[in-house]
Amino acid sequence: MRYPAPLPAPLAVQPFTLAESDQLAVSRRRLRTSNIIRIGHGIRALAEVESELPQVAGAFSRITTSSAASHQTAGAIWDFPCYLCQEEQQVFHISRPEGSAAMRRPGVTGHECRLYENEIITVDGLNITTRERTWLDLAARLTIDDLVVIADHLVRIPRPRFEDRIDPYCTQSDLLRLLERHRGKRGIRKAREALDLCRVGADSPPETRLRLALIYAGLPEPQVNVPIMDADGNEYHEPDLSFPEYKVCVEYDGSTHSDEDQVERDISREESARRIDWMEIRISKRHMRNEAKPAVSKVRTALVGRGWRPDPHQGG
Image (cartoon, rainbow, N blue to C red):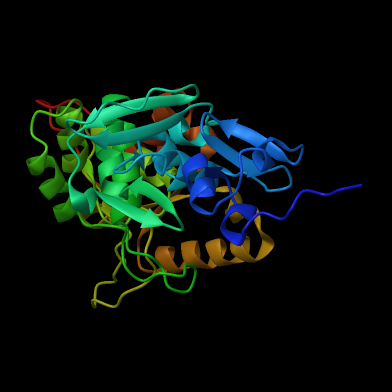
């Protein structure tokens, strides 16, 4: 029994284009053997190769020059915290520069748009729009709140003890420059509103959504992950949200807060806050239902108890 000849190393580990196999002198007859599968028009892979999203998108992005994974596909690869990017990717979104014909082939949504050189990068053979540009491309499809969640995710300062990076993915200034460069682009108004609401410090999407709910309800805007202080200026822990004028802080308890050690830390933190006359409000997933009205009610009650009064001209 004859076995097919092994493929050259670059083709044996990930999906590849027919042009790439031609360059390595692999015959089309070899590509018709049983252990080669068709991923898409002009794209093949060894049957045993696990074709994950970045690898398949990479092959699509290399079919022609100046193509890049973009929109929902790029958002999924960058692991953006939004529903469009977290649902299963049935269609690949590929962008080409303005003046080029949009890619048209089964399984691909092609985009033709103004793309600057520094808005596309190559990662492990994948041409992909940068995180900032991907955020802007998604503006036409997402709500303002979704865009704020992603923007907060992009500009947050990493915590070195938990992550393998020390710099944010980008800054608010980076996003502003991008908006100025693409005036008139579809979704630009929503992106501008989202950038105005973006803040550095949120560690999770629920924290961002909670902050927005409080602002929309007319409550004072809270500080984000800023240490609370006692009367002598000594710093304590950094709550998710805080209102220093009223000595009220808010913690969002996600799934990790059910861990036994974390429960002990949470109790210690609350006791510490109480000793310096701060009131801690704890919010969980159930408080975020019904447009976060239960969460807003808890925080409003605490603020009123500490002396805050809503502006009669603004509601709240």
